[in-house]
Length: 314
Image 1 (cartoon, rainbow, N blue to C red):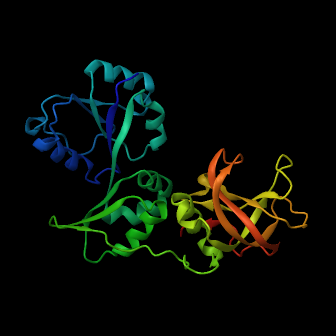
Image 2 (spheres, one colour; image 1 turned 180 degrees about the horizontal axis):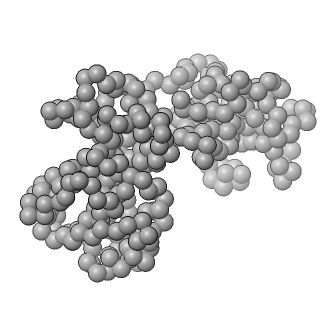
Image 3 (cartoon, rainbow, N blue to C red; image 1 turned 30 degrees about the vertical axis):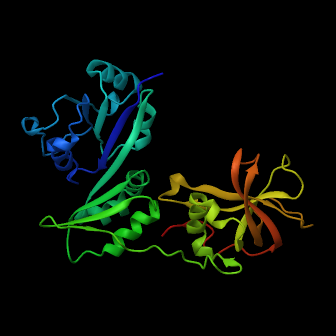
């Protein structure tokens, strides 16, 4: 069995502060655990590493380009340096799946930190949304460097939470003051209502929150507007009901639905729009191949499609 090697991923675009943070990390004696550490640099910024200041004693630095990001090359580097730990300064213009696909057996993601230069973040999110989303969705922490008093924490917070509810958020102001994000994210519907009403604009938030914490919804009654997906291989009285969700861009649009069991006599077919009321149970279903939310429908009827059929987080 391959030895487990923890991977520390530092993500962000050029001038976002990755190099500075990694330099300070390697200077910290607490990071010198005695493990042989490979610092894998995937882009060359204006700042260079000053290894003379490293507290980490057993280290090697390797630089690779996009063509070199392969399983064969990473396996060879791991063998060359007999690595026990890897720190990666990842190229902001590369999608993370490129790295995940190239990871040798035994390499395990231990921590992901993402850095953004605050002054250019909103422009990057507008013009490079897929890359911004890609760098947030797996992050444990998102750091906004060079934050200013005239910037809106709420605006930055909303973009991060549109990609993931997982990461902590830090605003590092000019001058070095760091402020941790404490903005609450109330759900846009009443989870304690007798019947939870999901507005058309809120389906994406509902679906993500449900999938992240299904037990929170177990036994709850819900009503929403959704699209039918069916297949002749499904048993009578079983369909999938959901909506197409766009997380960051057109390339990631996907139908996000739930198994629904009903007793309706309506001749339901794929792409029909319905308004349903149902109880959410969490149980195994072969359509999922595992446990998942199963809607036990109590009311169902045809309806008009939403004015915006594509559900988003924006």
